[in-house]
Amino acid sequence: IESTPEPKIMSEEDVFSINIPDLDINSLVIPNVDAGSEKDYTQALKKGIAHAKGSGLPDQLEENKTIYLFAHSTDSHWNILRYNAQFYALKDIKPGQEINLTFWGESYTYYVKETMVVAADDTQIIQPQTEKEMLILQTCWPPGTTSKRLLVIATPERIVIDKSAN
Image 1 (cartoon, rainbow, N blue to C red):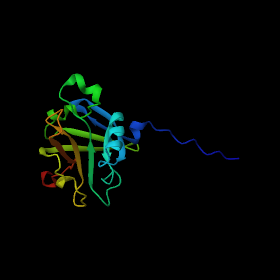
Image 2: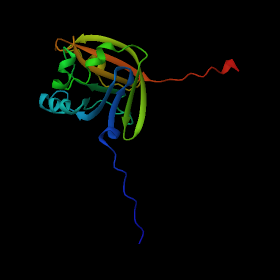
Image 3: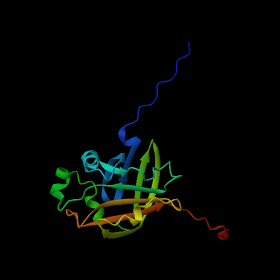
Image 4: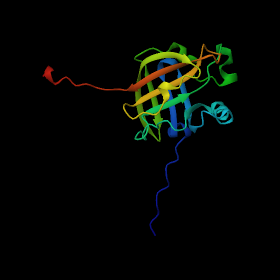
């Protein structure tokens, strides 16, 4: 009798996680959270960073190439644990910084292109799109308030090889 090998059990972080080395952000991502349901996102944000239901997933970008993640910020570093403010440090992010996602054991690298502050109800940039792959991180702005939103826009690393240099 032939036995089938036991499947490798992955950690939750292998299933979906985010790492921003320059900001010391390393967190679990809770997938498919209803961003319109306060009950759903409140529960998810207690555990980690939320992935908005309906937005893209790193290996599933046929219908929507926008991956949208959101988390709390806070008004001070001593409230980070109290509110699980995973995105408190986003206030310090700069263009060019690296963001790494892990999804089902695969790694995906993105680089910050820009940041912007928008009205709390401005959802224009997070609408589903199929043109270009984009990672959007969102948190409240200014930190600790709910008046506006800080958006971090990142795209996958693109390597251009200059063949004329040979």
